Amino acid sequence: MTERHTPRVVPLVDQRSASLLTPAAAFSSRTRMAATGLLTDTRGRPLRDLRISVTDRCNFRCNYCMPKEIFDKDYSYLPHSDLLSFEEITRIAKVFVAHGVQKIRLTGGEPLLRKNIELLIEQLSALRTLEGRPLDLTLTTNGSLLARKARALKAAGLQRVTVSLDGLDDAVFRSMNDVDFPVADVLAGIEAAREVGLGHSTAGAAGGLKINMVVKRGTNEHEILPMARRFRGSGIVLRFIEYMDVGATNGWRMNEVLPSAEVVKLIHAELPLVQLEPSNPGETAERWGYANAAGQHDKAMGEIGVISSVTQAFCGDCNRARLSTEGKLYLCLFASQGYDLRSLIRADASDADLASAIGHIWQGRTDRYSELRSALAPDVGGGVRRVEMSYIGG
Ligand code: SAM
Ligand code: SF4
Ligand code: SF4
Image (cartoon, rainbow, N blue to C red; front, side, top):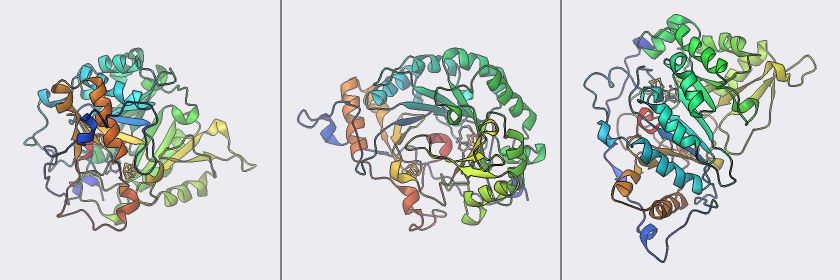
């Protein structure tokens, strides 16, 4: 069965207007916090990774993210004046970096749809970590505009990209993006990214050009092996993502999740794998290297990653914050509300005010949705609605 025939979607309840209040202590002279880089939340987790959604629009309608039935011509996207400007994004990002952020990922919606995105990349690439190093600056894209834009992105200072690709079979791919977009154009985008050097990273092999494949049981699991064969030995790290219950419109059901353990088993049966050490703390993917005849990692053949957000909770060292398209700070991918930073900066807050606000918000963070998931009632058909991934960013 293909995505196109899946009728199950859940109507959207708009969570975008709701927001949480920044703790008042952030603005009191006695309890103000400065950015020191030592910030931790209630569970001792530092703040290292910031994901910024630069648009809530997309030219694809992947059923697991922006189902066509909801994101149709009547859907009201954010007006341009609600979006953070590039200057506002850079200003907020700079304060996050002062708090210890080392990695920034631009996402969306489809980030390459945001006009002049390379100007934002130029501004962000000028930022330096507390140790004086360039940020690990990356972007997640559906690849549709990559062939056209790869060179300009690289020239603006982007270090690497992650491209989403859910299969190699053209019919499967067209049906999953649900706008009949051909797979060949995304493959050409990946090739262009590689040619201009968007795969070379100071973070080593695991930090270079990546491909994300969302696996949905009954939809594209038969694409797992062709994808593994195609990218083995290519220098590109292919990562398999469990279909997640993000947002509230995709009609998620547990029986459509193919556990990562099954993905590893399937590939291992044909192309033997060995487990590798995590590349850094807070890393979401479990790494598996292709093995040589002696059962050791064959570096020339590279590695895959599996992201088991559903079957294996990894909240314990989650160091990621998310900034939505209109400037709300979300502390978890599965949060239903965020903190309105845009209203702070549009009300003339100083950088010190902003640093104190972010400090207090992160210090109070308790989120660990994936760990709690199994104890929660399924979030379909009622209750608190989570915010959509296209708005908060993946
Ligand atoms: N449009 C860009 C893209 O598709 O790469 C960036 C935004 S997209 C929201 C970021 C990532 O989230 C993509 O890799 C996408 O496959 C993934 N994603 C979206 N919905 C998902 C879901 N329900 N489960 C797992 N991954 C999902
Ligand atoms: Fe668009 Fe990315 Fe969501 Fe697909 S996953 S609909 S490409 S934002
Ligand atoms: Fe982080 Fe939330 Fe995902 Fe847990 S569920 S890993 S806290 S984003």
